[in-house]
Every structure is written in structure tokens, then in C-alpha cells.
Image (cartoon, rainbow, N blue to C red; front, side):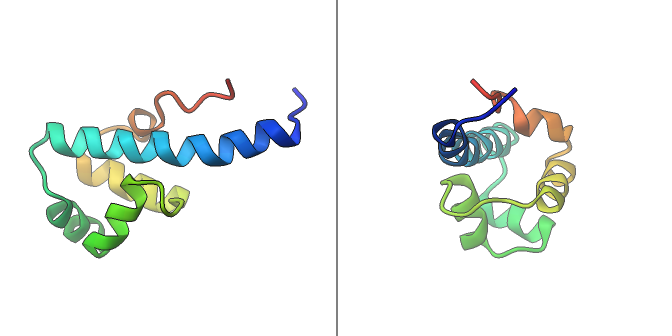
Length: 84
């Protein structure tokens, strides 16, 4: 599949928002605060806030660490991260 520049730009904007929302939804469903999760993953709360609000991208390693701290499969945090 060939991706146009427009497709790539769309993904760069959309994927961090989807991942951030998924992290926030799982965290809130578990009754966990940003502070608690940030302590579990070794980051400060502001960095987690920025991830959840798509102000920064999250590395694959950090995403896996967050998934482990939330006790979910990393795929759960990638729901809706399709090319469409």
C-alpha cells in the first residue's frame, strides 16, 4: 500500500490522539490517577498528561511499559490505530 503525504500527515495527527485517549480511558476505568500511573512507569505526571493529550508522541518502549503498568496488552492501547 502506498501512502500519500496527506495520509502520513493524517496518521501523525490522529494516532497520538487515539493512543492518548486509549491510555486515559484504561487508566480511568481502573480508577488510577495520572500521578499513580506516572510513578509506576517512571515518568512525571506532566509527561503522562502530554501523552494522553497528544502533545508528545510515545515511544514503543514507553507504550509497552504503560501497558504493563495498566495490566493490559499493548494491543489494547492501539485499538483504532488503523490506516483509515
